[in-house]
Image 1 (cartoon, rainbow, N blue to C red):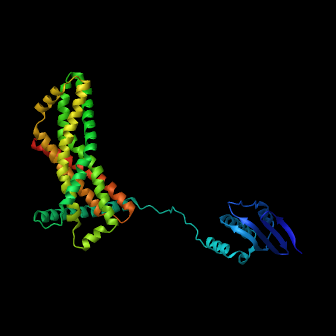
Image 2: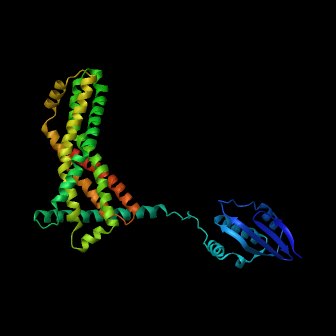
Image 3: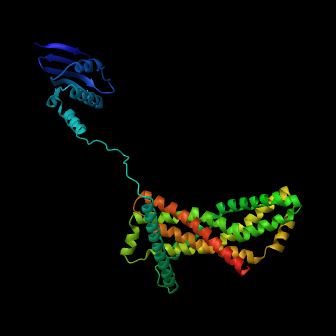
Length: 379
């Protein structure tokens, strides 16, 4: 004898002995609206040990709304030990249902790994540092060989690449160098004015700004700007070429990446850094002059005459030499990180970041060494 247990708009559950039959009809989609199935699940919650089959002869259009209903239905039936006859489902529904059932469980994204002991981590850092410096020394040796071949006219070197890099590292950087240099000069003037005004010695602000820009701040700020702008660009460009296997292609056709890629960038920075340093010096001095003229009643003529009498060309030469050294360090660090980049997008980003950090560290160390040498030599 067949009895009707649950009846709704688009489904009907009938019971015949130990057999359950779920008749589906109409359109089962989110657009048409999925019927309320809570009475059906309430009835199944009180049922145990029976078998459920489906009658889909009147089922029309369906989408993921039907699949969601079936997945919840199967979970409820498994909890109540109700066997399900999936063969009575439509072929498309049955395939999707089997596919969703066979998907492996998502494993936890975070795995607990025991941390290495402190000594082990120190050892890993030391090994990585040794490997990095060994690669760096080898890279520097290849650069010297490339420069020697260039002097002999045997390097694979294109002057069109050099002119392009000169434009990118020189005129294209004038705006940011101008802005930063003027602001640095103004800051130096403000800092000096706080103390020198106490003694009525405002005129000596010109001495501090001129000497500071000529010997230190002009070359230093230009180097920091170029490290973040040009050094990172070199690392990203060469790193992308490494990812795209363009570096390997150059080696395959017997073209040295050092000659073809590194030397134009290195020479461009060696040429442009001293010129940008001189430009930054004068922009910084002008920035200090603006502060003196607007706040301290010191005319431009007095300001520049004081600088001319105190800051000699030797101080500017020291700044220019520092700028040339900084240019070599920036180009070397950027190209080294780019050529030793991994083969993924994240590796390119890490190479650019590492190039900036390495350049700034080398700039600070080199500046300290040159300053100490100048002090010892009395320059």
